[in-house]
Image (cartoon, rainbow, N blue to C red; front, side, top):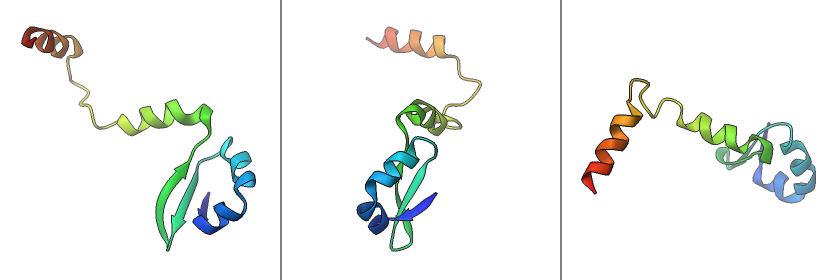
Length: 71
């Protein structure tokens, strides 16, 4: 759902209830500026943001060993 910052300000309680079931994108002057996410979705949202950042062929153990060797 996309709503304006003014609408969020005037109806915050309503959007808090809605955030438990869906993400709410908040806009200002037509530009998306924030996202209201329910607490149960937070971990998923954060992990979803990491998808594509870390290459799939990365060897976590090798990186860990390398970092420990540097200390």
